[in-house]
Length: 118
Image (cartoon, rainbow, N blue to C red; front, side, top):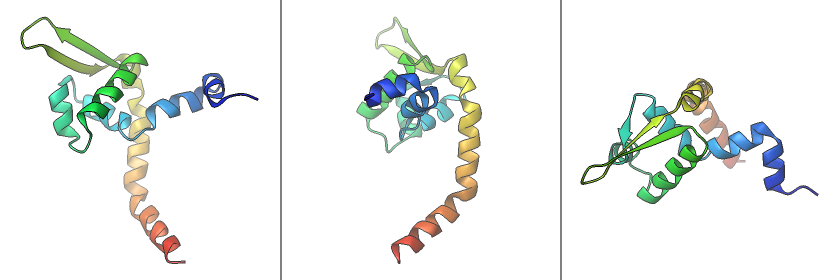
């Protein structure tokens, strides 16, 4: 029997969705669409993310080649984040999902509340 990890590696859609469909990856990418941001600027853009979670998510996005991290040799250290060309290519489906979510969010919430009333 295949483990979940092996199954993810062999199925591109599951592997990619597993990595980018978390709570924060899409939001970070959408904020980086506007250009290079420092860690503190990203934190201000997404106030409900913890520093630890922002750091972990940025590391995962960097590991997958979606985000570039640039460290400047200055004191205090300056670190900037930007989307790579691969990360920018992911914005197309992200925007489709964002637009779909905005168009259908009220209907989904209404359906949820009706389901709870049953």
